[in-house]
Amino acid sequence: MASALPLHPPMPFSSSSRLKSSFHRSSPMAVALPHSSSPFLSSFPEFRGLRIQMPSSKLSFVSMSSRSARVSRRSGGPVVCEAQEATIDIPAVTDQTWQSLVLETNGPVLVEFWAPWCGPCRMIHPVVAELSEQYAGKVKFFKLNTDESPSTASKYGIRSIPTIMIFENGEKKDAVIGAVPKTTLTTTIEKFL
Image (cartoon, rainbow, N blue to C red):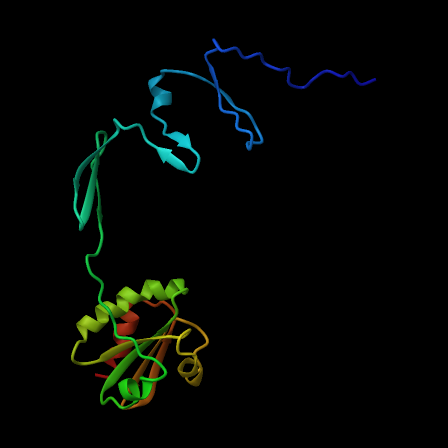
């Protein structure tokens, strides 16, 4: 004895209605929202697909340069974004140059084993670059791409990257595996100075 009553009766919409429908053919659901000039509703960003656009009166661009961009909000303080102008490039070593650059060098040599697809490797690159400046003239720094030089990586048993190895006078002395803090690498380097 079930009655055939609709759960949601259809709502009539006319062109003079103050309701805004945001129905899209690809959307599984239709949404009807009242058109309002309320300050509360207008403070929310307007959704446009995967992009959110804030009302243009909320932001004003103060300055823009290659080094930094500043955005100030009327209701709050400035937001500052500063990008590094230059990165320190650590020389690459390959299977072909391994012997001459690492094994035949007197003194300590630090080699970072990495790959372009490795997220933790990208995290540790700036740390190794800072250390190369800090220990310039005392330690030689190189990086080895394990995808491009697999024989050297397998010869030294590299199973995880990033791996930092320290060689002295052609011999492997120490290894640090993973994206570790700068202090850990500094302590490891200091043992060989």
